[in-house]
Amino acid sequence: MWMLLVLVYGVLKGCREIVKKKSLEKSTVMEVLFLYTFLSFLMLTPGIPKVGKPEWRLLLPVALKAFVIFVAWICSFKAISHLPISYYGILDLSRVLFATLLGVIVLKEHMGVFQIIGLLLVCSGLLLLKCRKKGKGQEENVGALYVVMALLSCMLNAVSGLMDKLLMRHMSSRSLQFYYMFFLVLFYVIYILISRTRIRWKSVWSNYWIWLLSIMFVIADRALFVANGMPESRVTVMTLIKQSGCVVTILAGKLIFHEKNIGYKLFCAAVIVCGIVIAVL
Image (cartoon, rainbow, N blue to C red; front, side, top):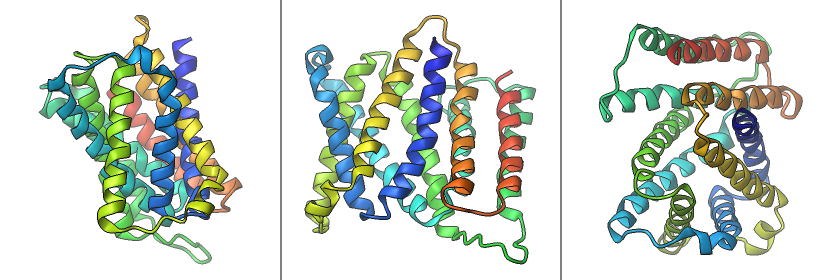
């Protein structure tokens, strides 16, 4: 059951990247981000009676986690709006690289031979993706700025994952999810007010892709939290299954967005996934 739940998370994660790109065809980045976050938070409110009151000393680190996600999502949405979805899906695999490095640096986790070989393969796959020369008739238009933003988003998401691990020693996953989403909505409201960002309320509420995105986000996160709570679940296997989202985005690049070089991108993704397999052995 826990493997099935993690697979649901991985597939929905890949589908979310597709829905993000479709939603950005009708609305601006900040319009999508605000409504997406707000709707996701509203969907969590029925569970308030089970959330409980957190310790006051935990609210500041939860708010800090929310701010990390606030910046990460701005970077990822900006990147998705400008990069081919199949390309972004492969870059997103670099989260494993950042998560491993943070585990070694912050949590003092041991890094063995297999982990070093695995990380080298992950780096090789990412370099192969970037170093491919454009051939005749190939449309790839990849801006360096948006590649950096995608990688920055991956790094910040890894930081958030590390904070999850530390915070869940003191609070439940339901409580953490509720309060960090509350702070996240608050940060977007503050940003919109200070920057005087114009929100086209009528059109953004009618953008059904945002509604779908919010539903998928809540379901995927709940599936992952439930899987994490099962005693028999294994983190190493979960790490691998989560990468199923990459295949979804690459295939969507071909079937939905008609992107090119799909075979080569699948090869790069395979190199990275091989690295992940070796690293978690």
